[in-house]
View 1 (cartoon, rainbow, N blue to C red):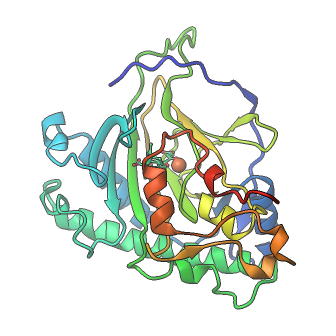
View 2 (view 1 turned 135 degrees about the vertical axis):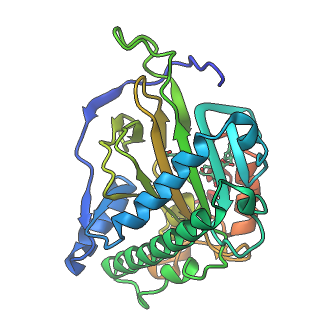
Amino acid sequence: MAVLSKPVAEPKFGFAPIPVIDISDPESKHALVKACEDFGFFKVINHGISSELVSVLEHEAVEFFSLPKSEKTHVAGYPFGYGNSKIGRNGDVGWVEYLLMNANLDSGSNPFLPGLLKNPETFRNALKEYTKSVRKMTCEVLEMITDGLGIKPRNTLSNLVSDQNTDSIFRLNHYPPCPLINKKTNAGKNVIGFGEHTDPQIISVLRSNNTSGLQINLIDGSWISVPSDHSSFFFNVGDSLQVLTNGRFKSVRHRVLANSRKSRVSMIYFAGPSLTQRIAPLTCLIDNEDERLYEEFTWSEYKNSAYNSRLSDNRLQQFVRKNI
Ligand SMILES: C=C1C[C@]23C[C@@]1(O)CC[C@H]2[C@@]12CC[C@H](O)[C@@](C)(C(=O)O1)[C@H]2[C@@H]3C(=O)O
Ligand SMILES: O=C(O)CCC(=O)C(=O)O
Ligand SMILES: [Fe+2]
């Protein structure tokens, strides 16, 4: 893997409180809206997703990443497939290997899936069940958010991502223990696993094993570490939701630092709309045209421009309305 020694800003508070939302309680809708406004990030508990389902998929992921390098690189590809160190195709690198897939397993976009692992069917079934359950939870969360914002109908946002044919993707990341970090002195402790960025989609749903490393950037610019919790899900507001809410919700900048001793395995569902979907501030959230902060774009336009950018770029900047 590539050696990364770029200095990164120190987290200000170490571990700090992250909004925790109990989605079994409808009244959590207000806390959800506040979390999206203040952090663009929150942890979800009482989600009802079977821990067995998550464990099976994690086990399959660990099996995959334990394969010899030659077998993994056999399924290397862009945008979907295996990748090691290189993130995207514009020069970003990290202490990470990953498998990126179209979340719609019936789309034909993941031709490498049948050849994966000894028992590809177990992997495929676990993936299918997992993405289905996470998509459902995502829609529930978006409906609570819509309620909390006082928007009608309550499926205004969930409709954008509820169909399995929308442009949603699924990513497995593996951050191996990093020998560049000195276990005794902690020298080199800031090796970047996944560089700072915002997610371009509407909302992302992350689950990891019990190895920490994820950090989020607060509105004041400081970084905080997110304590790992393998039984919860972490949600990131994406760029598209920032636009839909006319900047009221913040698309959270986040990154992952490597760990000297433990592997981190994460699975992320990026809920994206269909390619032709128009993304613009919801008219019910603005009183008059002058308040509109962003130009309208289609998801396909935004995605193309995002995939031509560097990881840390502010991708929304070019869509900010001028003369307001
Ligand atoms: C450097 C890049 C990697 C990325 C595509 C991009 O050009 C800019 C956005 C990156 C990102 C971040 C969130 C997701 O992990 C991801 C799959 C996505 O949709 O946008 C990655 C892209 C990637 O890894 O190809
Ligand atoms: O692996 C993680 O914990 C986060 C990775 C991430 O932010 C991403 O893949 O977009
Ligand atoms: Fe991300």
